[in-house]
Figure: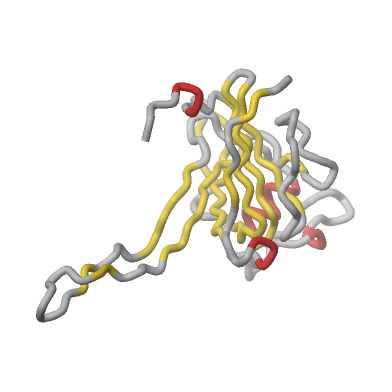
Length: 186
């Protein structure tokens, strides 16, 4: 692989959007703040704890035969995910964190926390921004739910940790997403 200075990115900023599950990938994004009408910005997320992509599952195992001790490797089962911390205390954050639908928002604006959370399935678009360059990371079907305790500190924002587990989507042959090439704003 050749060195490519144009292929490195420092995610100094970014935006996270959700849409209905299996929402197609936005085409020709020219503004990282506006990927299209069907995408909703989830708001402020932690600068100290940027989104973190995870991998959970087995490692490949070497299998051998009597004649060849290293004949082949197994194909492990792997689950991919993303962890993010919303710092915006609003209904959308509460829905994702507590696992509740639109019915949880009460007439007076309060939010009713369900006794039995239900992961919220959405399409997810994370756009990493480095100056005038940005990198769209699209996942058409993601199961989102709070993943840890709400964080509080006397000198920082309240944070709501949310984990998104990437699910296979028939929209793209049961794959879990597509990551674009770096794009430059005009």
